[in-house]
Length: 250
Image (tube, rainbow, N blue to C red; front, side, top):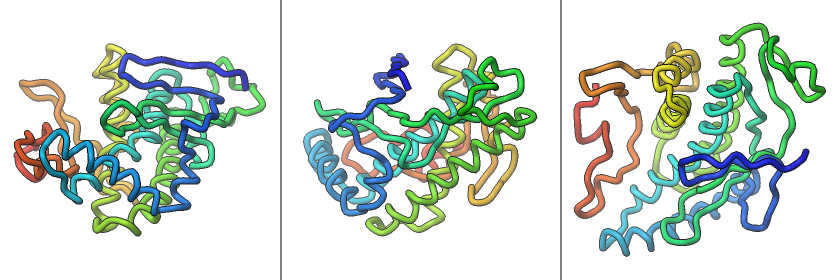
């Protein structure tokens, strides 16, 4: 595939067909859970610089969310913008970590041409395309592909943290809901992003722990988070918006 780069106004890149020593291939990371410990060590050093100390719950919570955001955002963005679902297999994805401070992912790479789309997609006759009948079917493909990737993460990351399966799947649910909403906000149509989230998570569907909870309030769109990143345990750290442990986010 010819290399193309979509640079977003989020401080991160989504790259198609990129491979480099600077990128971590998801399948390789998941195959060696001990590498998560090295990532957490780097994060802990940054936390000490920022907050005076680190916390095992916070390093685990941050990385749980950061990792799950990668397949969720790739899927949510392409679903929102093009009504396409790419391959989300760990071997087909990689991410890049920032090297100038906080070690968070600042780029996503996709190595596969395969995608699923709707009948009216202009590339529906492409050899790499699989066509489904309607948006509900496309959303089901997205859920299944994301769930398959998330299941491998839960199995791998669960070996090196004290979080249970419910907490890990709660985080996977949160990221799947957040991704299309974030894409809508980024591209100027938040309402459409909310609609996409409801299409992807219309009800509680296993293995996810809840339906989309996005609802409109006097302060705009809000949601009920199911998981916690434990940012609030750091010294002098403000809780995240809608933190499920410290505030009423219903």
